[in-house]
Image (cartoon, rainbow, N blue to C red; front, side, top):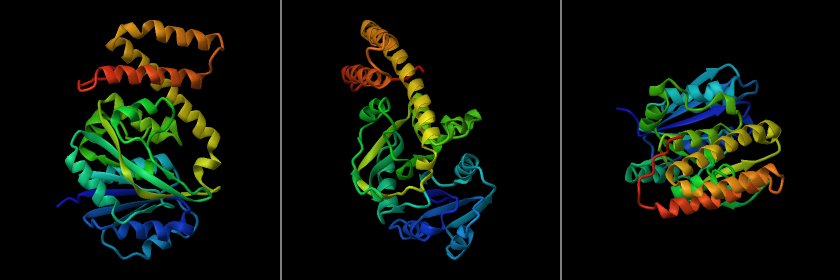
Length: 289
């Protein structure tokens, strides 16, 4: 019998905090899951830490160092009805899997569901992300609206959107912004996104994080995704309602004259996009992107 959930966690030289992360997964109130840990060519004692846990739910896989390949490999191995992402230095709250499983069971239209999260370490805050699909897809124009290690994904939809079309879930061309690109790809396929309004993840912040060490690459990848998303949103808006053409044209003309920058352009388009979604609330909106 297949598990309800597959937890997928890549590990690369994470021995310092790995115990805390693994134990937070193993101590969940929902215990019907497999725990796929992919060692991404670690050179510290991460393997020894993982092997110290004698739990039949753990499926340890060893790979040479290539984060995107290891992550996609782990996703392919998943047998659960749902796939939960986890990072090797974060901690789940004990009710996370149960809460997200119940949400996905009662919201069959949802492809991906994240949650609010609490940071600790060099930053200590609670981040209350937008919870509704309409708000999330609008906020895609401002940046990443979901916390990657907080999400649960519907496996069946991933097959429909990616594997059945010969694609991997995570786009290698968007390294360090692969999650942002994934939400974009799912939106294009008509998938719904959501965030549960409760803290279910403790997200560690430190100067050693890959996202900080590779901040320039991450910024460039995210900018590429954001620009493509902006273009597609504008195209979709005009296909849905051509009366937005003069307003959009004026905004792009103002940017061309350096009267507004790219970020102001995105913010202005977001206002128009939200207006269009509000006018069509209750209708099924297909994305011909």
